[in-house]
Length: 158
Image 1 (cartoon, rainbow, N blue to C red):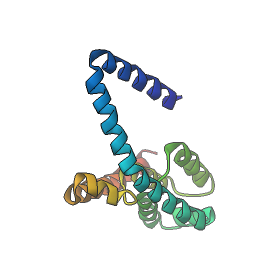
Image 2: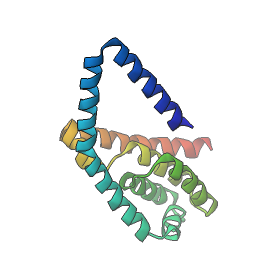
Image 3: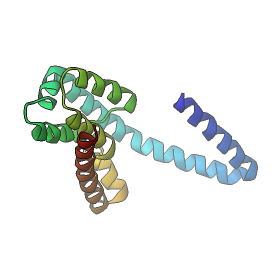
């Protein structure tokens, strides 16, 4: 539903832009098309590699790692798995629930989810190409640390 709403809003704003300036709107669409075509192969490659890794790792292994007897290590493992994984939220949330039901620690799952959305190891080459190496390193480092802090507080709260 959210995707449909975003598409409708985008089309409405594009129509408004065309009404205001047809030439500028055409230029903007051409720039967006060029950017899309320039990054689609990189994104598809990253998703293919991650999909292959996820296909090779059985869910039982991930559940064992995230539900181990030592919560702190399970949390670090969860953060590392989330860091190198890329998946849409509509897959990540049900996966996290099934991991929780299977015995994974809540704190490690919080670390998994937050790093999954905040840290981009898999997209690192693309991000560093477009934003620079220093920015990418700092953003990912701060995001990883904050994900661990968030996971810790989730453990305290819940």
